[in-house]
Length: 209
Ligand SMILES: [Zn+2]
Image (cartoon, rainbow, N blue to C red; front, top):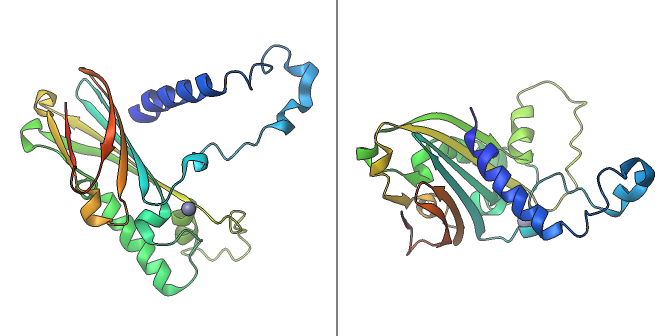
């Protein structure tokens, strides 16, 4: 179960839809009469490159019953120090090390032990990670269609089950220690106490519910 994409994705899609409702107004039932209207819209691979600012990342957090879902969405530069698809051994090693670090959820967020949370699932997504994993394979015909892109993002999603979610009153973000190129984290959280937003930094890394 991937709760976060369903809930936070729904939230973010709703926000995006509200922002773009006017420009997308013509889509819908009149679709077949305006088949070429899509050409006017740039479909940016469904990610958030429009908001991609180096040093800034997004942290989305949803607590729903016992399930805590956390999603980090960051410019790759914050994590790796580069955003091109790596080909040198040094850059590939940097990428693999970052993937190993991100797979440890407490490299991003540290949860109070009293909450009794266990990590169920980690999902890492990035064109850069995909490219590095493809170097495992002997698929020399594989085409990297994104190679020309100057910018790439990294997404890390974590799902926890917590035996005592009431104890999740404070969460400390540890991302800044592990990836100090991250300066600002924009928080969006949905918990039983409501919706919460804010900005976090190395000197202000505590989330309180
Ligand atoms: Zn960038």
